[in-house]
Image (cartoon, rainbow, N blue to C red):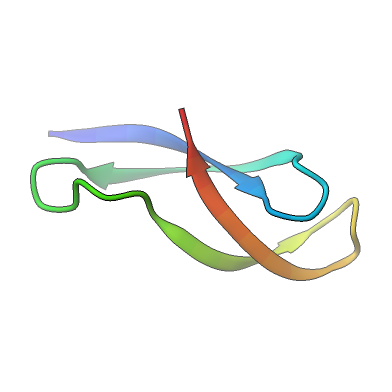
Length: 49
């Protein structure tokens, strides 16, 4: 079953994106590079609760 997760910017701590992932297959926290609107650059985004 896929669950909705939120991605938070590592620099400014804004929660910018939501996505889904399968928690049975990927139990660890997801991290990806995305564009942050408030920082106005590509930064790392981590999964938060």
